[in-house]
Length: 80
Image (cartoon, rainbow, N blue to C red; front, side, top):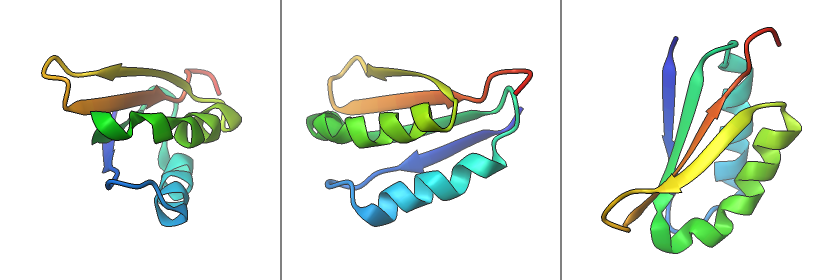
């Protein structure tokens, strides 16, 4: 199962959203996509979560223990 990682900049732009959308067709069932951003920018994650939801991915978001980084981990469900 491949693991694809994308890092977002300080402000999530249309280019970042397009990068996420362009990556999704490459995810097979069971593959994982990890999106990383600064925890201070986590308020911008709604746009990313909406894209993942619209493409039928399961996802979970969390911050790391030092409070600096925010992760979104998405997976295409098996059997889709």
